[in-house]
Image 1: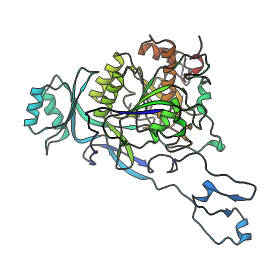
Image 2: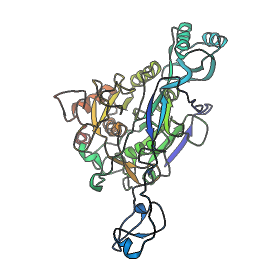
Image 3: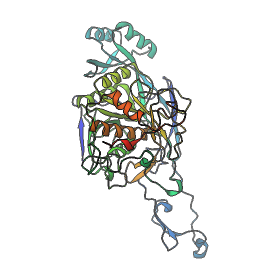
Length: 459
């Protein structure tokens, strides 16, 4: 059951302006996903005893043809090009809005003064987490972003002021199933098979999980029996982001037990915020203004565990909101990032007290694109993880995005059994029981080691 809700009185994030003004990164995308443009399920066709191929081998045509040398025997007349994935295109993605500043804690006098100086109030909303108002300002024409931020800081030294940074879901390439074997990756961490609410189990019922991600395909068969409340930041009925990433993460967490993509906590409850929008029809991004609103919405519902399979630059307002969320007693689990082993930390994983999750493959080897550093806390499966495709069926996914839900689900079980636990106690319990990998003790590749789910349901 999927419930849709929106934040009344709020407008949706305006269409992001495309500009090369701000520094950015280059990324390659194929249509809506990273699966070669074929994200419609895992049924690629089959071969029977007749010597013919159909389905996935037919390139989507209704024509059935002999395979191999039988073509010459039958005089097969057609020479067709091999089916190929759509060409990947490179899109330059700025790391911030080219003409916006965001601030927490501006007073009315300062806002009026900034307006007289040419700033325009684009949006404003109270943030209960921080106890003040967040304001998005469009900067004066002809003024640089750096100069605009400094002007706001000078006018309001008591406020938190920063750029309106952009954040992306953390997913990269999806390798094919090795030898056609697409098994669930959860055995790597000894995940309890009977975990989840409503089942006969030695595990406690998991606590509700918050998810800030892209849109979710509510009609996916793997989510048919899931309890998901989807919150949207605007009043529009339709999501503005693609559903691939959000659907995959949601199914990995709470997918129906008997479906093609069963979740770690089937029967668990998910409260998801669709905070992203499509950028140049190629990639989903969320700005800092909407991410903070999303955190505030989940905090208002007393959600104590939040999965953040996303990353971006450090941001003063984001850090303040994250700190306030954790102070409230909420556990934040974030993807370590896929920018490569030599990259700088990404956020929110890089913030203190956020549980930063890296990824390993089925051979316990580190994911080659995972960010490394002293901030990494724990590792979990994140290469070739089987979960829901965006439309139907299942598909393997790779990236630290899909490692984070394992730790999120583990935290949900821990809190279900011990609701009084504080965020640092949950983090200690998860890392203390982890299976040490790499160098003895905590290291920059695996953190404290691989998640050990075997202990989650022990009395």
